[in-house]
Length: 306
Image (cartoon, rainbow, N blue to C red):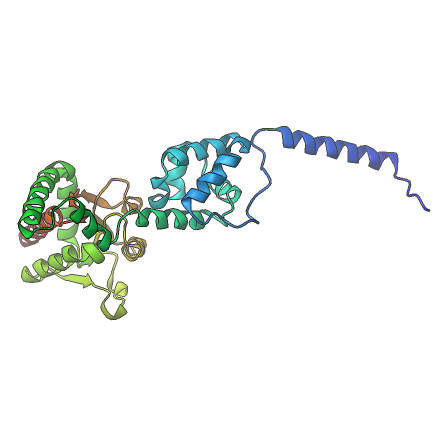
């Protein structure tokens, strides 16, 4: 049996390296063995279960971010990496490391999971009808009374949620735009379609991006144009994507949305906030359409004065 004699100098270097590795393992803030090779959590519940079992082992900054996510889970679905990092008071790199520690390939994969959970919180229409039946509000006259009441309350709220300065800024931007583009789908589509109708009646150059027949008209958006993007929670991906590309092309963005943390905020959009109350999870558009009418008429009047 042969033995290999290791030089003393090499042996000493090995001892030093071993000590250095042990010191790094004991130093707070060093990277833990990643779970990225494992399957990522398939649900938000599984995510928090994994987080609960590993949080005590996380380095200081990652633990700080974990605590922030645990306290503000809804923000993951609607925020960027930099926004979450700012909220948690950590560096964006800590957010990316956290995602990898939790088994995701990156932030996009983790956000997709939270967005799916965020959208599932909104019940389907069969569930909403069942909720109405549970409360005994099925009769047409009772429903009418309910929708009139929540419509009135939503209109009153509109006076406090829309800032006068933001509304004036939106009118100024839209009035000087060469062409106004309306983007909004699903529940927001009645708002954008009305805006298109109103602008056409006032001879204001405008384009309604309807998505009918999957026809993409984004190539019509120019740097001197403006976009009215309308979306409410749980936020339509197509609207967000189109608004993002429009912003990248140089167009101004006016957002009709529900909360200040809406994903459209990251585009530095002029935000006009609308809070619609609901009846059994059915939300009317009383306030949204009233805002659209006021916006369209104001823009038409100002363009005539220019």
